[in-house]
Length: 503
Image 1 (cartoon, rainbow, N blue to C red):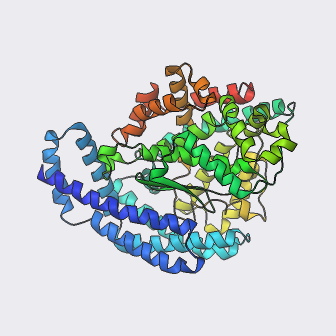
Image 2 (spheres, rainbow, N blue to C red):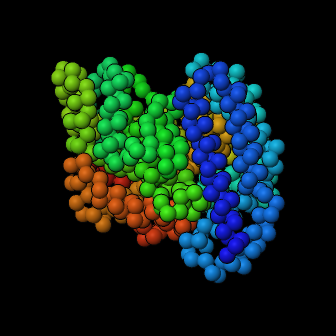
Image 3 (cartoon, helix red, strand yellow):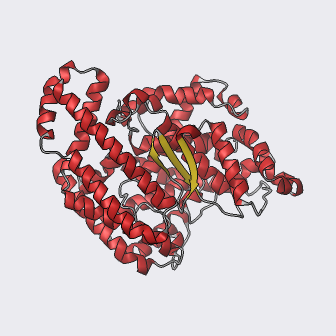
């Protein structure tokens, strides 16, 4: 198995290079001095060019041909690893190194400009950076399309969700568009009859950070292999041996930061529990963005916004802000905490959206980025298209407010076209996974109410985390839940928790 062994060594070297890329990118978003941006962009561009060279060495074609002949001797995990290595290689060889380096440089400059210009609502200033990113992404999409035999947008989508196509997403999103308006209307009507006690703070950032770290510990985050930091946009980065998560803070709202931590902790736990014996090889990578997002949304939404979790978390929160809890105790009571967490109301900001309106944000972005990739929507027209979509989907306008409109997310400035659908697909998968876990563990909610997540972690590890990329997304979902991905479990969850108000 000489050819297969040579390919695995190449990919272990690639993993080490991508480790360096991941930490440089994390530092760019968290700690890098503002004036270092241009130098960092060049460093990342050069590093990604070297990674591309390593991933497209001319003799790899012969190695893959030889490994195909050896595949009958390989064990199942090695066969899956060979499949994933070949998939990476096909995508890499579709793109010239010059395009990889140019795109990296443009995306770094764009993201750095976005951090600065979003704060001042300056879309016009951001537009030249955005145009460059879109142009280069269109070029990459065309090259990938030709090599992979996919549509340009499907070729970008495949980078984040292997095998997924617009044709599979469209009926799922159509069902959500049909189901959600009525569910949102019924939930808001019911919730208008409920009083919700809140406290405006202020919530000191140092106390919020301490609360987030304690919550991470209770949820099972391994601080020996990770850390928490602050960024403009919450994210989970790094590698399984060194997972970096971030959140952002507001003095008047501790829940935004805390649930940013809970969400990213779901990503992080998946990263930290990937198959240890295979780390450094593609088969040990997460199984696409849908599954990754399902882990964060399962923890944030299904666990974190449940009545059981509110009973567990309320005393921790009150202890973090004792003066406020003493003066306004109702706001820190589990019942009122749960009502705050489950409140449904349209909002401009995706990351602050409730569980029902959140998919509407994703469907809007999905529709717009498809048009950006095929050229039917020009970058300069995005603010108007965004405003029209928000008015249609959620009855809100962003006219003149690009900061809270089309500039709110880091994904497009960073060139991540094709990622957004994963959030809604992940919400559907999370509902199926959590339903299956509860059916297996009859007292799961009782355990969560006691702050005990061991049984849930065991189920997730057995069915998802330990599987890495051994199986396809559809095989993973059906193997864990017994049924293909659909909206059924999500609709059932929404009806019970929100429309009926059962918590």
